Amino acid sequence: MRKQLKIGIVGMGAIGNVHADAYRATGAAEIAAICDVDTTKIAATGDRLGIQRRLTDYRDLLAEPIDAVLVCVGNTLHREVAVAALKAGKHVFLEKPMAMNAAQAQEIAAAAKKARKVLQMGMVHRQNPTAMIIREYVKDGLFGEIYHLRAVMLRRRGIPGLGGWFTTKAQSGGGPMIDLGVHWFDLAMWMSGLWNPVRVSAKTYAKFGSKMREYRYVGMWAGPPKFDGVFDVEDYSTGIVHFATGATLSFEISWAGNTDEESYVEVLGAQGGARYTTDGKPVRILTEHQNRPVDITPQYNVNANGFHGEAKSFVAACLGEAPPAATAAEGVIVMRLLDAIYASSAAGKEVEFK
Image (cartoon, rainbow, N blue to C red; front, side, top):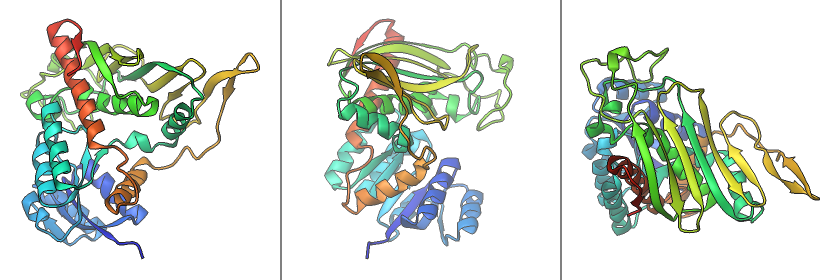
């Protein structure tokens, strides 16, 4: 009989509850303990899911007889909690972004290597069947040489928690680049197999959130706004990344802008291409057949739950049945890319990838 992995969750906000529900729904593991400094949050989740061990200090949770920890706290605590969990001999699932910057990410990766424990990043889009199919086409060589990627995630009015931790760089590490771009950069490199960026030219802007009382919106995730708070991050970013192969990646990532909303990652190859979206429609493979342009529409279950897939893949990795679905090394590359984008914008010029 397969071992039942015992899981502890640190951080019972929205994403912590999403993961709790996913593990319960899949039966992939037992949620043995939950932790949050807010007792109302752990009471609500504990009562709803019947979890008895409810703690307010993550160090107490690490002392519990658990096998793995899901780190679902704010960005500023990712390094602290993840490193402590690894040192305590626990496998770690770490929500995005990996850390506040690449230096912190490398510290986490080093701790995982030293502890010889699984560290899986929370890159849920990799579990989407459409992303998996595009990656398969690329790996099988059906797209030919991959020469360009496009990563676009544009919101018209989507600044989260204006004036709160999302828009305070000391607490978040950045704006939409570290909040949303982290997913799209990871997905673009994962689907294409291009993990070797060498140069970055980018520009970030803050045209909406910086004028907090003038910002007009319909709804606000993590709101309401705190007008006595801080907005010192970007709300739009654009640029281009060069890879060692000669391929490029162009991107536009925003929380707010006077533009139509769009969200996709596109892979362009010499023999075929495709666009990843989350619109629930099957992917179209744009290619050629008998000297004519044709579209191929694979048939598959487009409604698979990505968080359920993450739960299953993490448990399999912890039990030694499969490698982590998103590795620490890949997480470090994504964070180094984000650092380079911010550095390029600050310097006003192209920078080398470090």
